[in-house]
Every structure is written in structure tokens, then in C-alpha cells.
Amino acid sequence: KAGVTQTPRYLIKTRGQQVTLSCSPISGHRSVSWYQQTPGQGLQFLFEYFSETQRNKGNFPGRFSGRQFSNSRSEMNVSTLELGDSALYLCASSSGSGTDTQYFGPGTRLTVL
Amino acid sequence: KNEVEQSPQNLTAQEGEFITINCSYSVGISALHWLQQHPGGGIVSLFMLSSGKKKHGRLIATINIQEKHSSLHITASHPRDSAVYICAVKKGGNTDKLIFGTGTRLQVFP
Image (cartoon, rainbow over all chains, first blue to last red; front, side, top):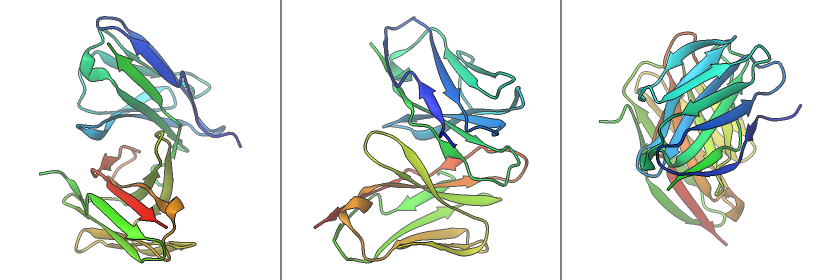
């Protein structure tokens, strides 16, 4: 089985722009979770999607949004980028039963200038 | 105070040494994960535990639910074990949301 894929792997944007990141889960997985990793805050949960519905949301401003498509692929969007949004954005997929392990993608490294 | 605390933050070892990384948490959980992150960012799930002990090769993970504590042990450490090890907990309910510790950076020298 192919693993979790994320595109793009690297991205450079300027303040005020918006960005869309994509995550393709392992085939058959219905849950996709997104995480942000920064040197200062470590890993933090952004949101979780299951069967096209947001099942859980972390403590991030409304500039961060996401969605999931019928094929379980997920996108996250960050609008009006700030310098502090520079981070590694990771997605992880699972079957969605709540009892399975999660499989992480390689991440998208976003740099905001 | 963080809901998940790890110690130590940094750890250096000589090849062959036995290594222990500790994780304490303050919330009720349904499962605890040990994750490994190599330079470059990729995260690999090593273990998911809800009770007892699990072993995979040279890695052993234990959890004590009553004491809200887990340990990750590496026997006969090797330079390729050098990575950041992260403890993460999942609260109850039908969700995959993880709460992470700050990680332990391990360096194993030959």
C-alpha cells in the first residue's frame, strides 16, 4: 500500500498570501488529521476530518480551515499568512475507528517571508 | 503545565547502551503513542498502547495507567536510533486527536 502523501513538500509564501496544502491518505483510510509543528510550540493538533465531516478542531484561529473530499483526500487552507505560520504541516490518516494507529505523511514545510 | 511531559529533553548515549525515555500525562486517555521523528520531519508511529507492555525488536514500551506514566526503552542502542522520540496521548472518544509531549532528542555515538 502506498503511504500518506503530502503536496507540496516545500512552499515559500509572503505575509498576507494564502496557501493550500494537500494530503492523500492511505487507501481505505477515512480519517485525516492535520498537525502543525514549530520549534517553539512543538506539535499541535489543527483539525480532524472523517467521511467529509470535521470531527474535531484544535485551538487555531479561523484563518486555518480544511476540508475532506469523497475520496478521503484532504486539503487545509491558511489565509492571510503571518510570519508565525512558518512551520512543518503534517497530516496523518487512519481508519477512523478511534482505536487504530495513525500513519503520518512526510509533511509540507511552509516558510512565510 | 503541559498535559504531556517528557524527560529527558536531550539524551546522548554510546552505542550499545540501554536507553529509557519517560512520559507522564495528567489527563484521562484511551491510548498512548510513541513516535519517532528523524531529521527532515517524517514521523513514524512506533507503538500504540492502552495497557501493559509491547515489544518490537530492540524497542520496548510500557504503560502504567494508574500512575499515568509510560516509558520507552531501547536496548543495545545504535547510531541509527538517533532521532527525536515523541510521546502523544489520545483522550477518550471517537477521535484521532493527539496531544503531544515536547519530545526527547536522542543522539547515539559509535
